[in-house]
Amino acid sequence: MTSFTEELYGLKLETETGSLGALKDFRVSTADWYVRQIVWNSSEWLSSVSGMLSIETFEDFSPDADGIRIKLCGHGRIPSSGGAIWAGMGYQTGATVTAFRSKPRTDDMAVRSIRSLRGCRVVASDGALGVLTGFMINFPTWKVDEIVVRTGPWYAGKQILVSPDAVKILEGKRSRLEVALCKEELLRSWEKAEEMGIV
Picture 1 (cartoon, rainbow, N blue to C red):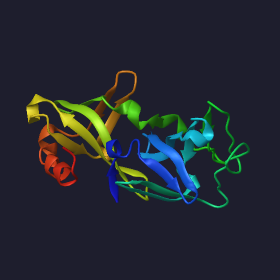
Picture 2 (picture 1 turned 30 degrees about the horizontal axis):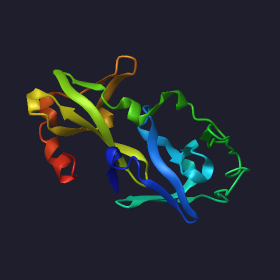
Picture 3 (picture 1 turned 120 degrees about the vertical axis):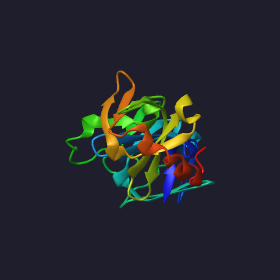
Picture 4 (picture 1 turned 120 degrees about the horizontal axis):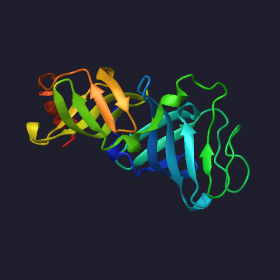
């Protein structure tokens, strides 16, 4: 199943024991375009802590219109008060919670907040395409299947889909993403976007 990131933000993360909080962001590796972590805001039970969970802690992550059903791997558990959320992970009130991996990835320096990439200027080989508005993420593979771009006047502001495999350069400081495609190669992708409900 593929989901548009903009439709997932704010949805409740529902576990077998209750709501963990609301989905706030995804963190994606721009080296291979796989999601590495999710960011969430807790509910009142954890004093509004913000947390970051590695996708490796999930056995299941199933989004739908009512929320996102999650199931933690192994002996993961949600505390009622104090203590560790699960092995290798703790928290402090008002702090950020981070689930870490036993072996760090060599491409972690390329991990970026997906929300921070919104508004990034997208440029084709023959000129400006438009601005990045979101991503299509495949569950359960956690792969970014498509980058969603709202075009400028050259294509009546329609939303089009760009494969992350076409990304040539991502300059974070300049908020600029270059793709190795020309505009003509992307003209028909708006039909696929409309079929997916992206307008």
